[in-house]
Image 1 (cartoon, rainbow, N blue to C red):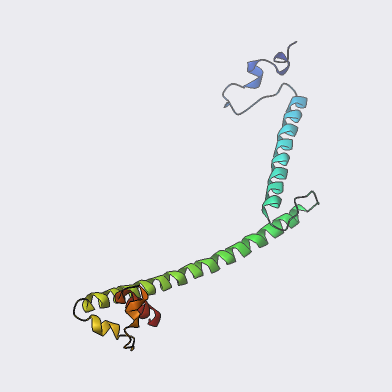
Image 2 (image 1 turned 60 degrees about the vertical axis):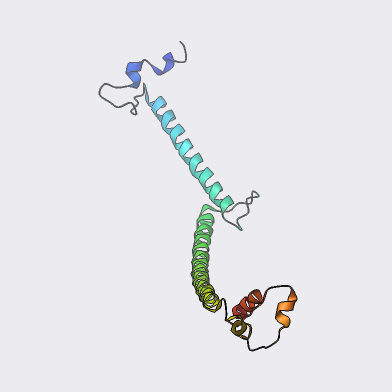
Length: 156
């Protein structure tokens, strides 16, 4: 008898009116063996999932030291809570930085408006904006406008 014949004919595997997923067995031994194989596969999947979780959570040694499944779940939950707290703090930091960025953009815009309104004949007034009357500012190799712009930014 060949290996294919040992499981019976196609009529034994598929009962009339059943779906393709339903399998009939010739005897109880085959049924038990199939159930045991499915259960072993399920347990292996759970074991693999716990090992993956253990490896993903920091401070759980993946070096082969035995850690209970309960401890893996407990530490994973603690790690998730700490990551959520950390994420929330980062979100607050992002929000604060966005506010600072908006304020800086407003300052830049107001500086540009001042520059545009004072361009042309009012260059002498802009040179005295910071209160100094020194002409040494323009001798530094940069234009007077650049120096005034830098000083206005520093005072804002």
